[in-house]
Structures are given as C-alpha cells and as structure tokens.
Image 1 (cartoon, one colour):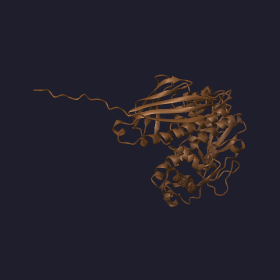
Image 2 (cartoon, helix red, strand yellow):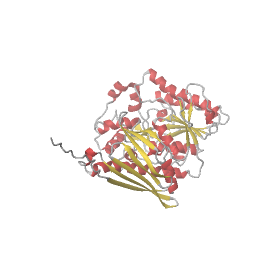
Image 3 (cartoon, one colour):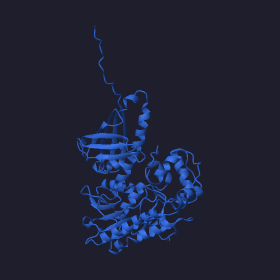
Length: 469
C-alpha cells in the first residue's frame, strides 16, 4: 500500500500594518522621558473610556513586563515586554499575549530645542489571523487614532502643568482613599511629576510607600511627620445604594469619624504635615436655584448639607494645630468609568437619556484632570485655606447637561425620568442627588489664579470620551 503524502503545514504570513502619530510637547526631551518612566505614567495613558485595568507593572527596563486586563473581571489579559529601553530616547513594547497576532509599539522622544520635544508613537501590528484578511484597515486604525489623540493631549496637558512647578521642590504627599477612582488618578498624576505619594491604607501595608491608618481609632502616624501635605479622600460612596437609615449612618461616620481620627492624629505629631487638603462636597449648599453661589454662601438644607457641615467641622483639630487646611468642596466629577458620568453613559448610549424631574436643577461639575490639578494647586498655594469650591466656572441645568452628553455620544435626548418615579425608586437619595442640585462657582480658585483646563462641558466630555476628532 502506497502511503499518502501529507502537505507540510505552514504558518500564514502575517500582514503587518504600521500606524504612526507624532505630537509636539512644550518641554525638553529629558522631561518628556522622565514623565514616561514615572510609575504612574501607564495609568495616565490608559484611555478612560476603555475597560482596562493594570494587573502588573514593573519599572521600565529591558525585559520588564506590564500586564493589563481588558474588559470585565474575566476579560482578556494583555502581556507586554519592554525592549530597547533608553531612559532619554525611548523604549519598545512587544506583545507576548493579547488580542493581536503581532504588536510592537515604539515610543520615541525626539529633541527639538532646549525647551521642546516631539513624542513619536509607531505601532506595527497584525490583527488576529481569523479577522485580518476580511476586515479593512480602517477598522483597526480608527480606534488607534482615537486612543493616541487622547494620549497625546493628556501628555501635553500634564507636562505643561508640571513645568509650572519644575523649579519647586518635589513634595511628599500622603493620600487616603488612594485606591478609589479619584485617589488612584491623583497618585498617578503626582508621581509623574516626581512627587512621592504615601498611600494610607486600612489593611496591612505591602510596600514602603504604604502606611496603615485607622479611621475609627488610634494609629501610628510617625511616618507622616514633617511631610508636605495630606490629601484626605476616603469616604463611603453616597450613590452606591438607597439611603436607608443604616447607609446614612455609614456615609456620615465614614466622613466625620474618619476625618476626626486623621486630623487629631496628625495634629499630635511633633512636626505635623504643612497642609491638609480635605475632601468636602458642594452638598453644603443644598438644593438651590437662581444665581450661582460661592464659598461665602450659608449652609443649605438636607442630609448632605448636614453631613458636609459635620465633615468640615471634623477637620478643626488640624486647623487649631496650625496646619493649613483646605476643605475642597467637590462637584460632580467627570470620569468615564466612575461616578455620575459612569452611570449615565450606558443609558445615554442606548438612547435612553433625557430630562430628570424638571430638568432645571443645577449641575456643578469638574473634569477629573481639573480636580487633580486643583488638589495640587491647593498644596502649592499658601494663600488657599478654608472652603474652596472645586467646580468648573460654568454650571448648567440638568437638561443642558443631558443634551450636551447626548450630542457627544451621538444619541437623542428624549427619554424623561419623572420625579415621582425617582422618588419611588430611590427615595431620599434620588431627591437630593437627582432631583436637587445647586449652581456653584469657584470663586476662591479663580481668585487664586487657578487656570482651568476645561471650562465648558462639551470640551470636557469630548476629551473624556475620546470624541475629540
């Protein structure tokens, strides 16, 4: 019997697509490189609309590894190895495991002059073998164009901001709530400028930059002696569920008791921190219509106003000790995957966005990057103390907010949510968070000379959601 001949199996030849983008950067090449080599850079570069989480990130060096998780908790892992690492000229990321059949990303830092440079990103990639031959190039390059437009603009923003303080000292800043949406973004923002961040954690510290604190009792604050600032962000999520009596008590206790414990403990240090930036909220003003109010306005009515008053009062121990204390009254923070915006995106993308209640209630908002800058500005500005409104200078009504968001995501704004339904489903929480609101202006920040990055809602949303082009 004559044996059958088998054809040798050959791997298909990959079709490599090259994508390249450049952007000018208003700093020297050395500063551009230092920003990329800082531990927080990768988190600053992840587009906020993408469900990506950093699993493992080693310092940039030849052979070091970064691992990302794409999608939900059981989503795809993307592992990249760093190669050809030059601390002044650039580095390469090579995909070892991920969605692409081939992926090599070169980051080049090009000197232009003594105070300017160019960032060049070159990606050579091949789509998955099963899709590459049947999909047009634009299917793959359009998301890259959107991603790099965001990455380059954020890089320009951050480096221009950090250049303002380039001649000042590098700060040591302790942060509570550092694992939260704002706290993790703040840690990345500060470390890319060369500042040191000490994370105050409730569990057992896992590294030299973590210190255990106890929001409900005694703890050892000696590692905070003489540092530049403490940023206090910890607190129960007020929008995580219906406000039962138990949840209201947890919300109040997490803010008031935690702040009191922190402030009394650092005030007892022989050399306390120089500044305390303590999160507060525009809930202080209650539900207000009419002209926008500033920090001089009296307290409003309602649960949030009462909590905020007690919250700010709990920082009195720090003020009495001579620690410069800023009570940062934060508005609605625009983050694509957290907070109010994170909850609104799905219904708006499904065409189910629209007016809530009357739609006339005020919405005082701030983009996450302006909030991070406002925290840093508060650390660096000795004249700031007491209540400071962290909101953009252009509050607007809920229906105007809804129409703007619908326009950015290219959907209609036609689905009303009547007030009786809100009250039925959410009770007091819905009454205060959705049906109530206030028109607030950032008088103290403006008077101190703070330059807003995003003053109008549409530009802030377009940046955050990658709709700039």
